[in-house]
Amino acid sequence: QVQLVESGGGLVQPGGSLTLSCVASGFDFRTYAMRWYRRAPGQSRELVAYISSAGDKTDFHDSVKGRFAISRDNAKNTVYLQMSSVKPEDTATYYCHSLQQGQNYWGQGTQVFVSS
Image 1 (cartoon, helix red, strand yellow):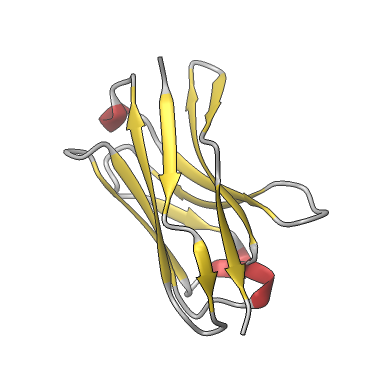
Image 2 (tube, one colour; image 1 turned 180 degrees about the horizontal axis):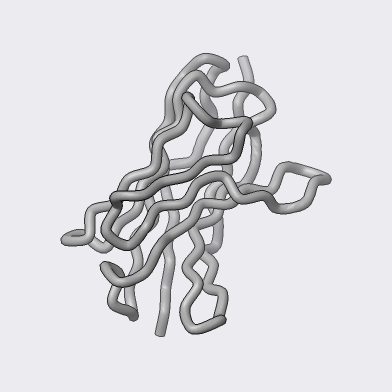
């Protein structure tokens, strides 16, 4: 059974930093690309960051380029989203995602609040 469990959300001041983690289980983590999505209140879900299975390719939503980083530790079955220089508009629920043979798997999400 595929499971994705996010953690690390919370309240952070504008300009601050936060690292989200997603621990995966139930599948061969190292063979799948991973993604972070977010959904802000009243808005649709958007793709924030992507990382290839080997971790050698990444991509980001334009709004977070230069501020967010994505990485993974295949030995720990974990993908990270390092958020820095956060802005109030980064406030959202962040979800870890894996696409496997056409099936979408999501974590339960972790909430990030950016406010002074």
